[in-house]
Length: 595
Image (cartoon, rainbow, N blue to C red; front, side, top):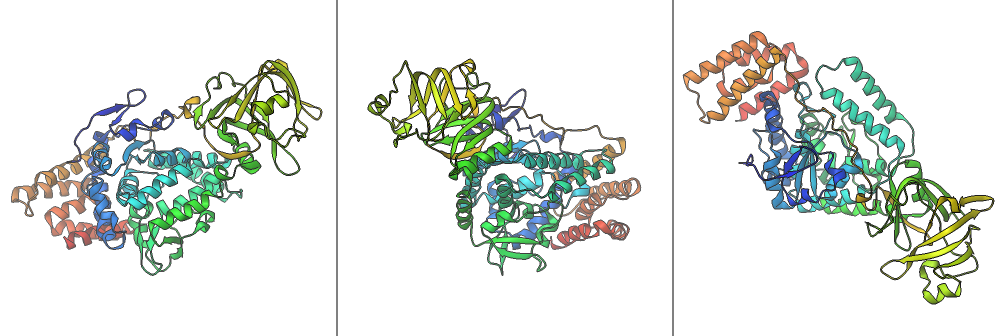
C-alpha cells in the first residue's frame, strides 16, 4: 500500500512535499529544485512504459545485479506494476534513514551532491516517452526510482552515496562546467518535450557534442562527475570474471544492462584512475569499472578527496575559485571563512598567498556559521585582506596573546602601522579584534585605514572600515558558501519538463485504450479471463489495430491477458514492419512465455 498519504511539509509557494524529518532539514537553496510529483498526471501509457521496463529489467537483473537490488525494490516501496509515489517511498525510505523528493530534471552537480549529503534521493518525476523506452538522456523516474533507490538498501553503499555527496558538494567547478550543464539540461528538456522539431534537437545535440569535445583542463567537479558516472551510474561490483551490476544507469536501461555483460565491454579494476576517464552520455560505454566491494569505493573516494582544494587549500585552491567565477569559500589557518566570488590574489616567490580579493556580496563565517555583524550588508562591495606574517616578527598574528600584541603596539583605539613580509603595509586606527574558540585572533577592524603594496593602493580610508582577516595561509578552498543562510541562493526557475500538455484527440483515444486495459488488469487478478472480458479486450485490440497500427506496447499487454493468436500475429507483423522495435516485442513475448 505505498500510495498511503502522509502529512505534507510546505515548500516555497504552493509546492508541498511528503513529510520526513530529513526533508525538514533541507536548506532553501536545495528546496528550490523540488517539484510536486503530481501523480495524477501520469497517463495509462506512462504506467505501461514503467511496467514494461520494470518487468523486463527485474527478470534479467535478478541474474546479473548485485544481491541487494531485488531486496531494495521491496524495501524502498517500488512496485513492478505501477509508478512509485513519493509519498509511499518516503514512508518506507524513512525506515532505512533516507528520503526522496521529486526534482526539476537535471539540477546543478553541486546541488545534486548536496542532496545526497543530506541522505535525500533526488528523483526526476518525469517519465520517458514510449519511443525512448530503452534509454533517455534526461533523468526520469525509471532511472532514479528503479535505478538509484533500490541499491541504497545496502548500508555500505548508502554510506558511500552520502559521503560522496558530502565531498562532491565541495568540488569546485569551472565556467565550462556550467555551460555544459546548461547545454545538457536544454537537450534533455527538448528531447522529452512534445512537438519539438528535429532541427532544434539536432542543434542542441551539436552544442553538447562541441562542448564535450572541447579541450579543457578538467575541474574538480568534472573529475567528481567522472567518479560518480563510473560508480553510482555505471558501476559494477565483484570480480572482473563475474561482475554484478549496481550502477543506476545500468539498472534502469533495458539495453545497457544486457550490453554491459558482453565481452566487447572491457572490465577494468576500479581505482582513482576512473576520475580521469571521460564518458559520452549518448553512447553505450566501451569500458566499465569493477570494485571488489562497496567498502573499496570509500577508500578510492577518500584518496581522491585528498587531492581536492577543500583539503589542500593554498594558492591552487584559491586560483580554482577565481577561475570558476562562482561563489566559493576559503578558510584561513585561524578558522575564519570568507565566502564570495573571488577575483584576485597576490603570491610571493614561494607561491604563498599574501593578498586576496572578492567582488560583490561577501560574508564571513566561523565553523560554517556567519560571524555576527559580518554578513553581506557589511561586505556588499566585496572583501580584501593581506595574509601571512609581519616583517621581522617570527610569531604569526593569530598566535599572539595580549602581551605579544602589546609588545608590537597593537592597542585597541590606538593608531598603528605595520608591514607584512610580502611588503604590504597597513596604517590606521586599531578598533578591535575578534578571536576564535581557541583564543586566536581571526579578524581585526581598523578605521581611517590605508593598505598599500608597492605603488598600489589596495584600500583607502574612503572605502570605509577595513576588516583584516588574520591567517598565515589558506588551509581550505571549496565551492559554495560556508553559511548558506548568508546569501539569497534561491534563483532557480522550474522548467516545464514533465508538465501536462493538452493531448490531441488521437492521443486521447489511444490513452483511453491503455487506461481501459490497465483498469481491467487491476480489477481482474484471476489467471483466466471470462468470455465477456476476453471479448471486451479483443474489441479494444481491433480498434487499436485499425486506428493505431504502429503501437506495439498495448497489443503486447493485450496478448499477455488474452494469449490470442490474432494479436500474436499482429505483433509478429509489427516486428517485420518496424525492425527498430522488434527486439522490444521479442523481449515482451519472452516474459509472457516465462510466466
